[in-house]
Length: 288
View 1 (cartoon, helix red, strand yellow):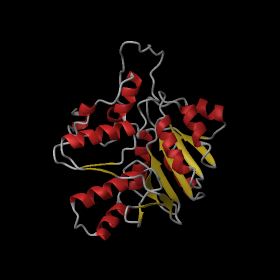
View 2 (view 1 turned 45 degrees about the horizontal axis):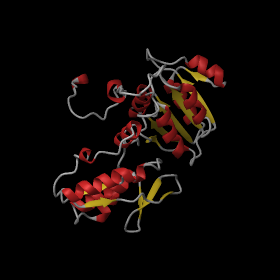
View 3 (view 1 turned 120 degrees about the vertical axis):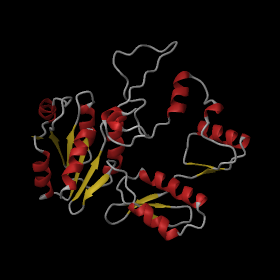
View 4 (view 1 turned 90 degrees about the vertical axis):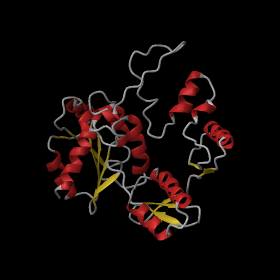
């Protein structure tokens, strides 16, 4: 609260907003020798059913507090336990519930994601990230429910132009340059699920010392022709020289020079890793 003179809900990439510690303690829970960072950091993970599963209890119905009396609920939730709780709560509060099914997804000739909406029409999105189709389908249905008279072409145009800063963000075309704030194992895994459907020439990667750099590198190497490590001004930077030697990878020390070199040779470049590193890449293209 109040960091960087900000007091509202944050969507920025400041470290204290993206790396929030979570402590889980209770009877029968064994003390870990090191922090568990693979259970609760997955962007698509629903904390409530996960914690209930760890505790060996069912999802408590009273926790569906976001549902208000006579206010419709629209969700893409697929977890059966959560859906059961939602339905029970909606019945109690006389709220109409709509479940948006996960849409079919395809790519156009350039690799951009398109999804099949409930009317049977393919909707174009300005992203290569297939997982964003679910978010777009939910947003579309919300608009239709709230504004039933909204022009369909306007909705399609808005969806086709929408972007999530720093998350599979396209900074340049011809060659394609993408940045993604995948800074942990789960984030890198989600990124690679979309990258494996593309032809990626180079991944430029940097990581902080408290992250599992080796595991992330191993997965990234499977979805591109080459990985290049790159250092930047950050006190918590991992030992990139050691990582480079272990994985027999090149190590660069100037992001701008490296990006210019790769743009002259490659058709698709992905810059990912630390959010600080990604923000530097975004600033580079602000001046291009």
